[in-house]
Length: 354
Ligand code: NAD
Image 1 (cartoon, helix red, strand yellow):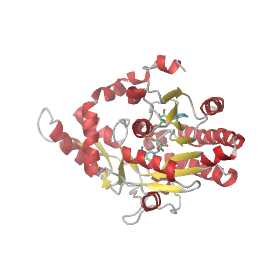
Image 2 (cartoon, protein in one colour; image 1 turned 180 degrees about the vertical axis):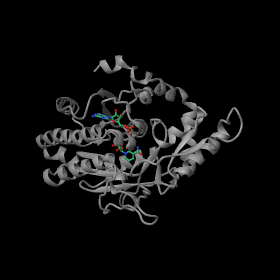
Image 3 (cartoon, protein in one colour; image 1 turned 60 degrees about the horizontal axis):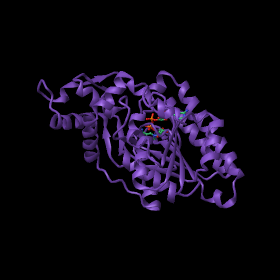
Image 4 (cartoon, helix red, strand yellow; image 1 turned 180 degrees about the horizontal axis):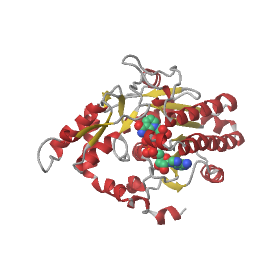
């Protein structure tokens, strides 16, 4: 049985990735997550006792713990998702982003490198480190063009700058030490289990409370949206078929501006759960002061992963958004426990068991 060390597997993409891997592969998963405000074991409730899933509460900055996990489980690969991920928080307080995304990635790389260097050639040849990054490292596009793997880095927020720094560190560990790393730069994800501070779940949860839906600026900022299960299949594809040292851009060719996204959510809610007081949820849309330094447009050219590795996304934006709205409607307790903060105090017995 092959074993993977996943970092950040209690977050949005990480928890989806754990579900995806357990359902579609035979890998054993060691899931290391610090359980910051963004880590939520409720998202893994159905698989916390799964025989191929071992959850460990801890930080990527904890060298002793990582070394212990490497010795104990001898993983065949690492998928590194752990990060501080919310742009607005990085503007309010960049320090955690520098600490986790740069220093955390550095500590993780150091542990892995030292362990990797001790192993025999056969094991080394099969080992992979997949670093999950963002298209935001490339900065902002005008109305035309796409980000390719050759696009110059131009990060504009503390979040994207910290992710860019981590990408450079990962690249250096490949170039200097020969560590078999692969980097993915993905566009905006959406889907189940996303913390309701991010655009799509924020709008769904706020609309269900019948409160104003805050849209930044003129609502015309464009993002390229990818349904999270398509990101999970892309990560697995890169892990198993990608070439060490390479970078793969991942995107869904679903460019939408923020206003279109919010209007789409309102229209779906109008069908699935009409407002009690009548009228459309669109009436709640309110334009608010723009985010400082707000990038105008991101769009990914994903030709490399499509052509070289044969990956294709499955979900159209209409299907993915409809599934997402339906998920949040069916899982209002999940949001409620975040609203009250109770999600942070559960599962202690399971955490202590390790
Ligand atoms: P998230 O904020 O939902 O989850 C991050 C997870 O990392 C949380 O569970 C948190 O507890 C954990 N974590 C934070 N610091 C840690 C530490 N020091 N040690 C161990 N765990 C720690 O983020 P997400 O949206 O799931 O994003 C996951 C990764 O994908 C990030 O690296 C992000 O930059 C990247 N990414 C996200 C998107 C997106 O649209 N969400 C798009 C492209 C790339």
